[in-house]
Image: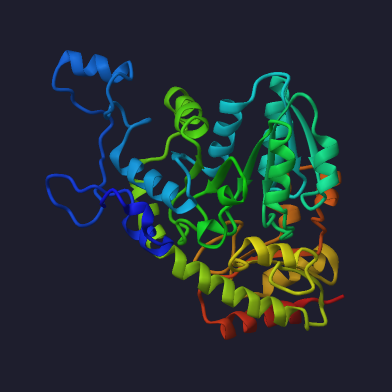
Length: 397
């Protein structure tokens, strides 16, 4: 693309940004399946290794296909730099290793993916990093939790799986008044629906595996932010430690980005229709979806998101027994813990995605035994409703 590529709208950036054609004149982005790159001279090799010259060295940290993906996602999020990683969890680990040291303190939302809590409690704590958990929607709790050694606020909004909405702008103001970085996991909305950097976040975290791919094909992660934090500090950790995105996966993700805007609008429309319908079902105790006027943070979600995404959590009667009866009766939705797929998926968070955290941590996050999480795909909504009806009919309480 030309140098004015950032003037284009998001749907165009998702298709065009980042690709500068090679001398071969290809129309589609190429996959560079090479571990290393050849230098024209010893001097050129030396210059690149000491960062005196820009250029490819080794695909652990410099690969042209991965770079296209990084440039494209940075353009979509409105960030200065992006680094691709081997998974979403690798992206979070990279952020921690690039920005924290022993004796530092993290304030984290208590409504995050279970593996994040495990990473912080089991591994970051082992290396002397303190962690405090707060409700994502309690601004006073964020203020009270901040200490002199707090270096990072971490949250995801909407949260997984309860769809709790955090006020990004307000939390950013609290963080920045104290010199603290704010990281926002944008997995559920993607830049098609929400722009955390524009709302004050310092870094955006992605599990690219989810909606950015959109078809459940590959695993990857990414960080988007400033040239220093992401382009230098996080990149430096990836260069050294190697939690890298593969060129093939980057190419697959590029294909996913091309349809991101269309998919997210379709996911959101279908999920809103199903969530509204679920509220009327007698065996459903509660529906957690920010698009519903009954949601506690509906107004905040409307303010900082352009739509509400494709993830619905709902509680059924019968606790675990009822939830498992529901899951075992469905025929269309896939029983898998992944999300963001064109195929609708369903899981029981208490025994899958949040199984490794303690019962007290699950209770704090609202992960009750009767809770189900559905990632609404792109099937016909009428067919999905019939599948949900099968599940509800199977609940015997």
